[in-house]
Amino acid sequence: MEVDRLNSVDTSAHSTEDSPDFFVVDVGISKSIELNNLDDKLRAGISNLFDEYQDDLERGFERDPDYIYRPHFLITLYVGASIEF
Image 1 (cartoon, rainbow, N blue to C red):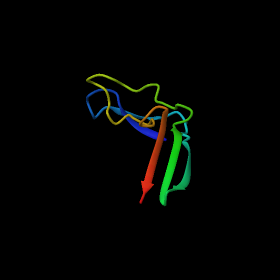
Image 2: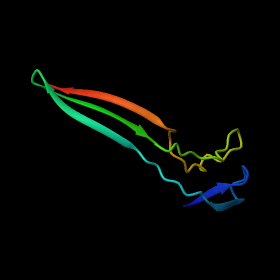
Image 3: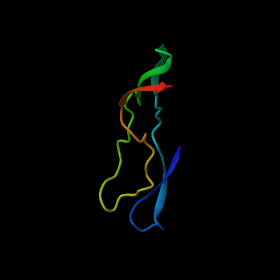
């Protein structure tokens, strides 16, 4: 993937760099159950299983806000339930 990256606050001086290759894996399971005539669903999972992130994310006032190619969140565990009645 090619990503435009500003070398300074001056937008006329920029270059294009290749971002490192990466992939994001999310896994999850869900189970539907029926209790007392209610349809229940339980779910759990992990987002960004291999914890991919951008090593060279810039910080501070002069950072390039468009130079982001990473997943939005680091590794995240989630659980949930829903009841339909």
